[in-house]
Image 1 (cartoon, helix red, strand yellow):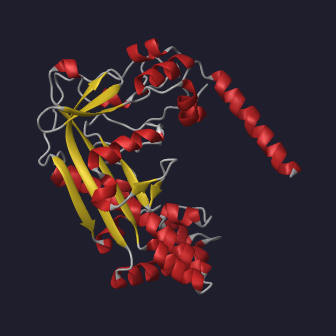
Image 2 (tube, one colour; image 1 turned 45 degrees about the vertical axis):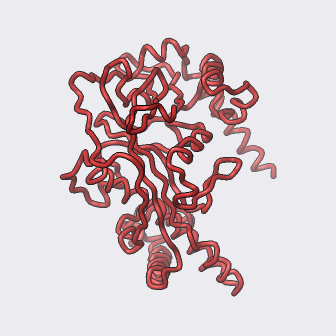
Image 3 (cartoon, one colour; image 1 turned 90 degrees about the vertical axis):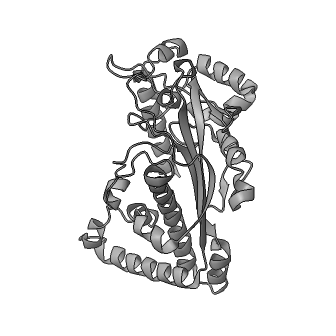
Length: 343
């Protein structure tokens, strides 16, 4: 207990030192330093298929898109796949675990004990300040995504990013697009796990959960590939290896609500409404905006070649109040959902 207390005190001091060294700027200054895309010279890719599509995914295809490194990390085996299988310290155990996982995967696929489903939607969109307006095919506004902007002071050559920077502004007169998705490989997982637990086989139960998580991420990778090459079709000639996909060498990004670039989990409600996720494929949201089944992934698609991942690390009081006003929240609610970001 004393050791843990000392560790936490060290973490507290280190975090305080880091926050003191980061100079903050006002929201007004941050907005003036937004990432500027030359929209007059930018090619906007018109999607091949607009609207919503529901997909039943083949697990035998998804297994080819698995990133195995996080699988080993979930078992506290440090190292990158496939090198970890030859590691002097953990290689033997890693190989055993890998073999067991693939045997389990073979069994799941042959018995069809787990199902994977996905839903994808591509819509017209424009940015309005830090927000993104989404339109239906009749050019009527159907949703507005609220975004946060970085407030850390940057060097002269760096911008203060916001996701809206990657969508053409409404006053440009250009029609841009935004994608959305939800995917799960968790259907049937609970029943399978309960069967192993009833037989006191905790190892196999945990193995099923870990595999389902990897398959959900593989599903997200696979449908993003389909979006790039056929649904949106802005990279139809793409030829990337699985290693290329893991290292995100493709064009565009797929940030998820609740993660660094868009840390407000409640924006997930808009994604669920936009795609009618629960009714179409059965993924539900808990009160804390966690997805059920747990082996699920969701997010937005940005196609612009200059779009990139970034993090909203801290926000100041002026942005907190501005966001609360745009969101129509009181300060208590905005602090509840954005507490970790508040400086």
